[in-house]
Length: 309
Ligand SMILES: O=C(CO)COP(=O)(O)O
Ligand SMILES: O=C[C@H](O)COP(=O)(O)O
Ligand SMILES: [Zn+2]
Ligand SMILES: [Zn+2]
Image (cartoon, rainbow, N blue to C red; front, side, top):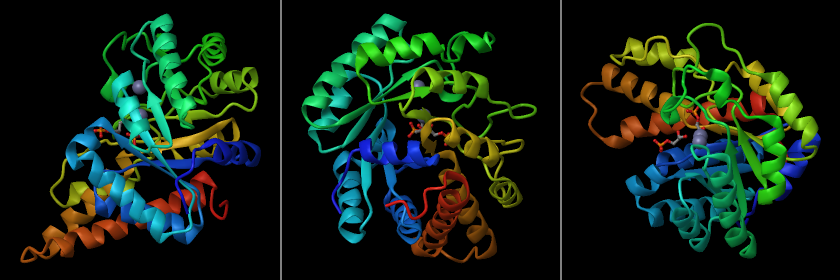
């Protein structure tokens, strides 16, 4: 099947109270693990590429690997730019055949975020590409300003409505307490569902995006720590909360950390158990399988998007 935009996917997900998984890709094994899982589950799929991934893999390699996935499967797949930080990278991805781009102006003042997002929307829409933007700020890798003022970084519902109206953006990433990376909560996990519900009620039928949504499965944390890694206290968003979010207008759930943990835990285990192995296929192969199993579980038991193609 060909690359598609997320328009139809999000419409169906919204109506069906489920979410589409948006998985970050950096190399062949990661792409293959995710795509095999989606193929088995017959699930619509978003493969997303960060600026860092483009730099690491070289844009053309990632695009060609995604093209291979399209050729090999009958899945609708969206090729999405994750956290585009300026107009130029969004333009480059639109010109390069991406069907969706994110412009992340969340660190800018409100009016500047609107102006930048609008500029990307104008360029992308003219070329049939959809746009995700961000309002409010997540902690983790983006955690720079006002960290102690937690609420100040959460998305303001009134601003969200104004932002969507003035930019014409297709989906919006919001901040309700998730964060990027493997250490999301110090104590009890807590998300501001009241805020999410308010935004959803004020923006009916509009797709909301949840970043920083890895659940950091404890089996991977334990394996990583057991086999010489060091991620003590890693904690993610409980799966039940993600299911709840999917019922409240969240159509896209972003997952990167869980892929990294699945791959790392598996590779560490192989290295420890078979120290004589030095053929990369001997450790990347099981790593790819670990990603496939994790993504399959996620699609089936958390996102609810099995058999939705
Ligand atoms: O939001 C993400 C990518 O944009 C990924 O979040 P995680 O770090 O929770 O996987
Ligand atoms: O949100 C960030 C994603 O996890 C991508 O991370 P990266 O910029 O290290 O590729
Ligand atoms: Zn951001
Ligand atoms: Zn993100």
